Length: 259
Image (cartoon, rainbow, N blue to C red; front, top):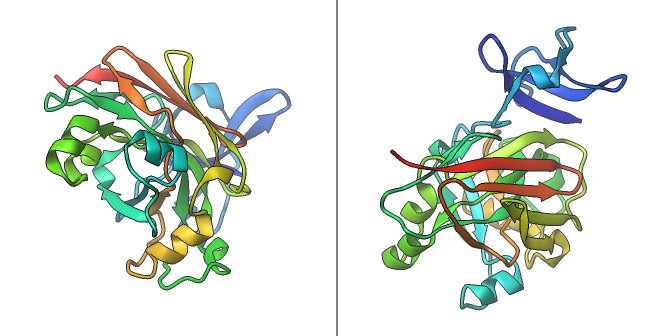
């Protein structure tokens, strides 16, 4: 099931994406599906008539894993960590499909990083590998935008990863999805820059959730980014970046100067 958050002529709502015959539609839901049972309103809206938003706005945090692909660790000039390398993005960095990524004045080297993202559905702490699937609401596509020059300058990643608009996610959450071996591809202005598979992750989804929850409680709506394949590179104002994950869809965002 594909759960989206959208705006039409009223306040943002949630809905289930599907088809009515050959027409893509969204069927609105009553309330927030992370906190209430799924209940359809009975409406059916053409998907082209609504604007998709970030499918979830984390109430708490975005948790990220760094250097989780061997080739990406190598291109960044380092080795794969012995344990998952964890950092955070603020929830204010989250935007949805089609929304602009603002190129900050403080940086001259902003990069794309296409990633698989986990959406947490239940409060969880001290998970085992075996229990990890029980707390996952679904998966979506993400772009861990990074000011690479500030990352090197600061020696830690809060500013480089945390600017407003630096965490595009979408276009929806897929609740029935096997993340073990799917293609992750990023294009810049239509040219393929990243092309990897989640099977190449050093730490898989259960290992990531087991590790993160050993020291941090995850809450419903929290997002966990799982790392990026090699091929990261710079974006400029005027570019369009698109991240596609097989079975999840494509997340596309323009890049604009932060006026």
